[in-house]
Amino acid sequence: MSFPKFKTIHERAAKNKGGKAALAALLPAAKSASQLKRIGDDRYLAEMTKRIFCSGFVWKVIENKWPNFEQAFAGFEPAIVAAWPDEHFDVLMKDASIVRNYKKIVSVRENAWFVLDVAKEHGSFGQFIADWPASDITGLWAYLKKHGSRLGGNSGGYFLRFIGKDTFLLSQDVCACLVNHGVIDRHNPTSKRDLQTIQDCFNAWHQETGLSLAQLSRIAACSVG
Image (tube, helix red, strand yellow):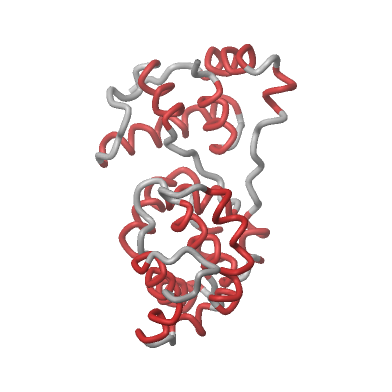
């Protein structure tokens, strides 16, 4: 399948944002593999948790309460959280300093188990994330959804973006860009076939431009409107 050249999309985004320099200032930077490996497993669990609690909620509220989350969840040390009995989550549900959503609170322990399992196999969760190829980022999304807790939908992608792994995001504007240029025909792509097509498209754009997936994604979003 042939894909549209990214040059036109890039030019449209620059025009929308007031020029190439203004657009360049908006582009995110992904971490290198060595940087991802150095991130502690506790920070991976913390970022998973933050993205899960931000989903369907006002992000600013979660950010303002985040020091309370850090304290309530023992700094997100996976081994500590994984060992908590069910009764401990009843205690957390009484803690008004955090957002008291029982299913999301329990997911922290489930993801602690997930992080520990991956770390046991790969040496650390960071090693696992760093080694996963960006050319199959949708495969990593699927892995997070299958083996983690509440990391489906956009939560897994946002987790990767905020932790620094190079990834594109299927935001409303990115999907609109893909539909406008005939890459996909629906604004809410969820099928394995659509996701593979999107991955192939971003891989082609990366080869064309040398830009990271995260940068391509932001530019695509900025080209809409």
